[in-house]
Image (cartoon, rainbow, N blue to C red; front, side):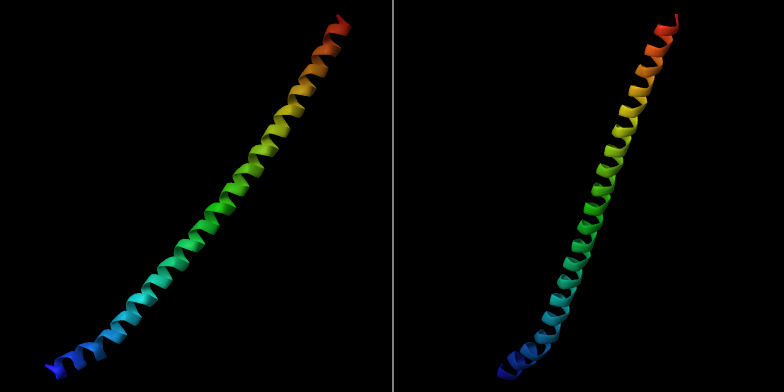
Length: 73
């Protein structure tokens, strides 16, 4: 009985190490994915701000052109 327990304990240490290493790699992968998603969201927000500014400028230009056209008439 003591021999069986000793064998189980000896083989359980590498198995626990393998499982722990797997969980650490999984956690690192999730962390990298979250960082990539955060970077993507930052880029999306920046793009949204640029598009909004572009639309604002276009609207102002249209208003100026409309004022010019009404003054000419």
